[in-house]
Length: 155
Length: 422
Image 1 (cartoon, rainbow over the protein chains, first blue to last red):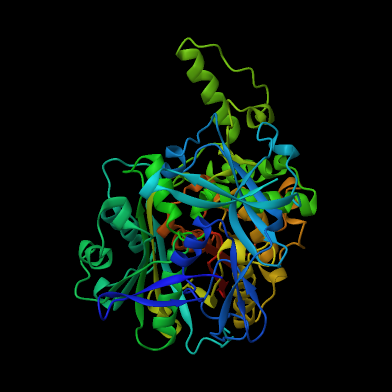
Image 2 (tube, chains in turn cyan, blue):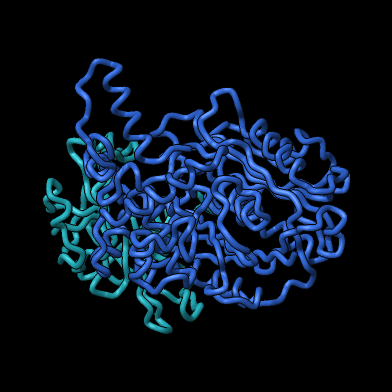
């Protein structure tokens, strides 16, 4: 069961109320990641499944969505080995000598998501295969308050 | 859903000019825009009174990040002496220029204006390469794409990996696109890299000898392009020569209502199709080997113009990366899916081929000052269609041409179709 403490800003007090539904936002998605859960959202009207989360179904325009945990299995739909990444990746220890893989992952649920991909031999990128089976993983960087969890998949 | 409607009023391009593209420490986006505006005014056959210009739309991706200057449009209008006309900056990432062009077309087609200036300007080289890469990354979905570590070369590399897997292309095939576009840019005096890859390689060898270093042993451009020393991998499978450069530059075109075009020129270029479509983040698409927004925009633009892809004689397409040109050539219907990569290899898309693509040198070699690129594409077709492209002029009559401008990985795409009637 999911427990979520809501902050009621109007009364500026922490409500005792708990709810099983978190908002369908980036913040909630990232909070789930920090709990090592990859969550999709499902449209309760037409059954469309999406990751990342969205509040309105692009297929039937319903706004009645629910969180559903992904089973964590997927396959590699496209990838790249990056030798020169953005600053935050450099700060996480990646560079020309320690490259990383970014990928588009097709989840078993049929939706796609961007993720880091680990467990591949980056010294032979030409041998990395589109279609490789992957399982969800969670990459953590930083300590304490600064700790961040990133969505990853491992081969 | 976007609908196809005929233009309610005809629109003609009667002037077009661009600044030189490159890296210019002494020029900002304003200086570059003025340079393009002056080139545009010189191109108007019968001359014109600038006070006839009623509105201006300018494509610019991010002067805020690149130059710490927002609110650019009125500054540019002032710099060319056009106050107090309404001046509007248009931002859709690397498609900003194409979208600005479409705004200009709509202003005239709607009857709200008779004479409109469309510009694009971007000053990118004041920042360090890593900072530019990060500024460009804000054109992606920062919430859900960037945490995976993607860069723009990385996104297009992922598309290339999917294309290679699906169609059996080798990364070497992409080199043909780079070689062709450099060949074209070598004949374009405004190009950032006005050299063939052969010249480039010879320059590298000469520089090494001059410095007293051991000369590289590349005997052909293919040796050079396969060597990490000559052509390093940026984001596998894409290498340096698969990527467009970081550029400064601007472009301007003058649009007028068809019925007054004869006051400006006896050889106007009519814009007969103008379409724009939006797309999701890369990961939310049914396949990675095409860009849905490009297919939608192309379909609508062809319908508006009453033409098909077969009728188009030349095209300037958005080759921010070599794979992007291959995919564009398929999305636009020039080649079947999986066939585009063979076209560059077989010379079909060369200047003297059946379907010349990027005779200007493309974003790859002409340069890619992002907000200017969509407008600079219109400048090239204006010159080619009027027989003014000098050494790179395509032979024969060009009565129909097309431009295709993409924002990010295809979250925005514009397609314009141009016609020469006399």
